[in-house]
Length: 223
Image 1 (cartoon, one colour):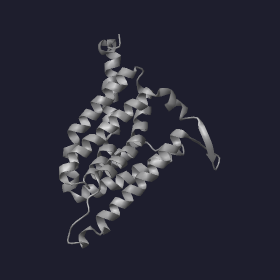
Image 2 (cartoon, helix red, strand yellow):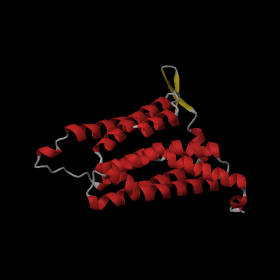
Image 3 (cartoon, helix red, strand yellow):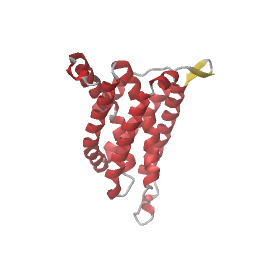
Image 4 (cartoon, helix red, strand yellow):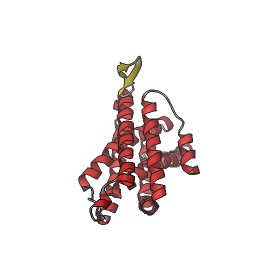
């Protein structure tokens, strides 16, 4: 039966390990969603966070169920300066560029934006535009997460359960993280700086230059 893995100690250890890893990999996703949702009116922020994380969960599960397609993403599509670029590489490079551009724009808007010149009123972002931006980054973060899951567990049921658990934890903590970021400008600026770092790491990964995530997480924890 499909649920027999629940009594398998090895499967349970894999579930616990993978759930923790998925939560860690989802930290940058929560930060990005919190910053984007903070641009909406307060009454819409919680709904945007919930929809954003729900889209992340759905995206990860759909990618997971498309294992054959994911494996095809590693096949080279073309070369750039003798560097083979696969579909996965292309997604990571474009996602990294988007993250670099978006983070730079947010830092500029925070420090030099024109919002305070019009009587202190800022124009709120549209709900649809925020959700679209979240969806674009969810694709990149989900790809990284699913590839990790495929490499760590053998049973699809274990992978899906770990994803659901991780997203559930993120949904419970997203509100507190978002409020903390909004009420501490320094933390928000540090978060945006680390999103720049993650964007650069994604681009490096796309060009087969692996940067251990331990360095990024250590810098985040230290700061």
